[in-house]
Length: 138
Image 1 (cartoon, rainbow, N blue to C red):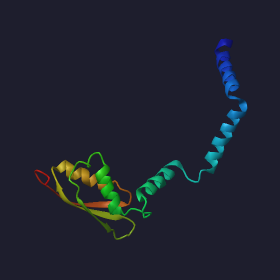
Image 2 (cartoon, rainbow, N blue to C red):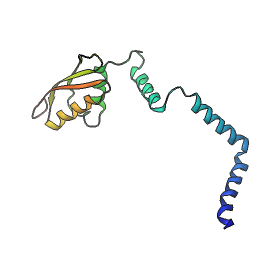
Image 3 (cartoon, rainbow, N blue to C red):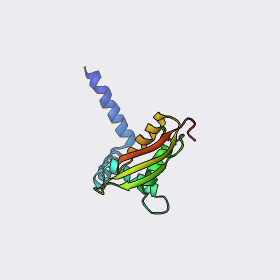
Image 4 (tube, helix red, strand yellow):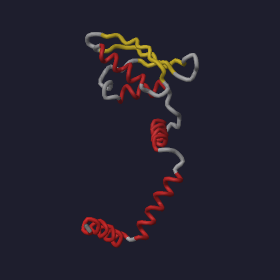
């Protein structure tokens, strides 16, 4: 019975001897200080970083139209499709945007994929899909 408990204890003592108690304690203090001093939660910080990257060097926050165009160009389901015209219109409550998509798509599933990708952008409340389905997408 002692062998079950002595192996983990010996391993722990060996690790502490190699690393050092002081270094391990400083690592713990640093991690705790970092967690306490973080101004925002992880998802919020990632969102802020994404916005900063999207701003680029211009310093201006991208418009809703630019974000929708970027989503359509980057989405795995829509990057290869003919890109539609994108127009953003404020809804009556002025808190959300309605996107108008116009253009052509090769089939109905491509038309639906473009609409869903546009709807997935933060701040978009609805999509007016005016994309026409044509045989060649031209």
